[in-house]
Length: 282
Image (cartoon, rainbow, N blue to C red; front, side, top):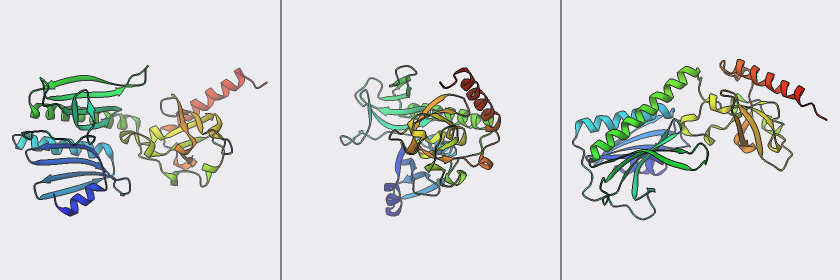
């Protein structure tokens, strides 16, 4: 890999990497860059990098890169997989080669040279009741090429599903500090529409439908309180949520409220008013 490209990659967090026939395609994240999502394509002493500002579109291109190489070459794994201790995550006895989250599901590709099926593809998501993570829809493969193809297919399906949800919801993009009332982060959040910082959300959920919440109660709503918990309602789907005060950018400016949110906000405020009448303060 060229030195300049290697130095750039060292500054990033690697989110996924696929090695095919001497090629390495790396999905990376650089939180300091204007366009934080990057795809590195390296072959022997040459390489290139593309920069993107949207996670899902980046992931779509990442899958396209890998499918192109899969179709052009006869993929062959290294003669032996060698991983220094502590450098790679393990699931069961499989060392994870790629683990990428999309639509709330983490898709993993792993290898265990000693297993009956040395290549492993699975999905990982939190258990709806227990909360811990469980691996499901696992498949084992003899062929590295077939495992890679299955991994890419699952990522592609997740990307297309997420993009369709965005279109259906009428998502306008990501909310930033400039979309908030100046200095509102120092005031009370109770009964206000506040914006969650994008960087505390999963990469595929850093959009206004996941950021906009209606703060209801708990100590974190009060800037003078010792507690940090902010109990709230997700504006888009109405779910009860909890964040910490430091997860909040501030109160959204009225003119920055997305069009899709207006009727949902009215519904939330009406329900909150009903609760006040049903449970008057004593």
